Length: 599
Ligand SMILES: Nc1ncnc2c1ncn2[C@@H]1O[C@H](COP(=O)(O)OP(=O)(O)OP(=O)(O)O)[C@@H](O)[C@H]1O
Image 1 (cartoon, helix red, strand yellow):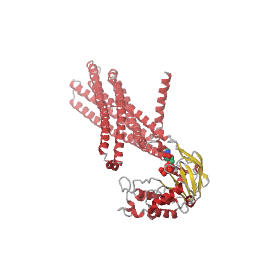
Image 2 (cartoon, protein in one colour):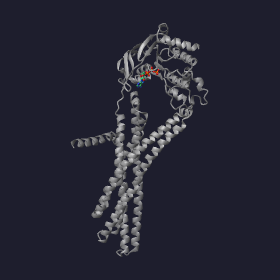
Image 3 (spheres, protein in one colour):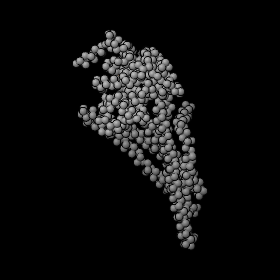
Image 4 (cartoon, protein in one colour):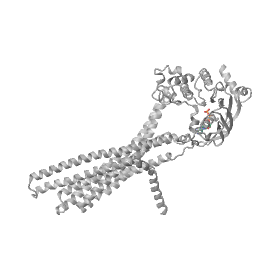
């Protein structure tokens, strides 16, 4: 028992905790929200004046009918006066309702904007490891779907709650002041309405979550099909892909029908319970009218109150479920917001990077796969020199590069840049001083020019062209109709693998960094082009520290030193002339590639 109570407390505490995070936004937008509350009060107060005016009008007509009032002109002028008041109150109330939405819903949109930016900023701070552990779809979902659910808490939930509170307080005070007994009977079915709507809302939410999940699957399926359309067509597996899609659509359809069945109950249930309240008002009101305790106008007034109160009461159930969903979503958002990046900038003062790199007995294990990618690696690369890394696939070449850019921190050993431990350098300065060309060239869906400029936002057109010439891509770019303004990516021109690699090289060159890193980035170009680019790079990288990863001896033979990796360990180290004269992996590879060239 005690345990259950403790659990309930914990659940409630946690419930408070997730949404508590958002309180800072209430503070930020307090004035807008206060104005919104005041406007809501005005709008509802005015709307609640109408039933009273209707009641008075009916009573005037009834009194005339029963001969209590005989002056027809007075009746007419009283009725006209009331009608004008009713129209005025309705118009003003409508205007205030418009203003209410303008303040509260607009505030919720502003908060949604702030929250999305906050999450996006946090995503930018987080380390590579975080992205390895979480799926892209999940990251997208939390910044879109979850934020939308949280917005519902700020917008509709708050607006309808204020609405309901104002309506309830003002209407009930008015109703009790007119007739206590009739008020009690009128309010009787309302809690039943609220509870049933709450139960129904929960069912609808559950079912709509399932529908959302299926829609995500359906979208992912279609997206994958479109991305892999050339493979699907070349393997002729369209019928299978079609069947998979139809099966998934079939289940989604069933889940959707399930959802609509529950949704279809919503309004009939409301109408039934409103009807019940109306019948009670007419029946009990009728009895009390016949007993002479209330007027005819009071019955009409009460019927109007009932109808005005029904929606806010139904909304209580709906709002509760919105708040629950917002709480669940905010909890998911908080998980990411509270996540601390593993790689932190330990030095806020600027660091000047010259470019010498030293690994001292470095070992590294990827914690998501537990693969030890590097074991006791030591080497020294002087500023301005070139190091080449060679080795079979999976031997740890890219891992060395990742560690130089401090995408991960080492488990043991030390990495020194200009003699300073890498963790003590200003992280931004370190990364700014590196021009990195990855194995798989990634281009943004933008123009070629902007893709190159990414390395230097202020680069002039002449500088862009020089970088492209050095990367031996300029002559390809000028062949495109739009030249440097050609769009690449999804809706643009599809560049070949080698062209993408060369744009990516131009992007690194234009940055003019102290350290240049080429991770097997010439694999998709032919040997002649490779030769030209290497010659250009030789000139460019004269005073820059350079690391080249490659499988081709031709790419690395001019490096000042070469290390050969195998299963994370250095098995050979030296210059090209030293290594070709020693039996081992390097000599073997050299002879093999020499033979291939002759063939
Ligand atoms: N992000 C990662 N998370 C977990 N394990 C990884 C990660 N990246 C690489 N590994 C593993 O670490 C080992 C070394 O990989 P690395 O990419 O450094 O090799 P490589 O020599 O660059 O290979 P390739 O020539 O194929 O690019 C491999 O066994 C690989 O599976």
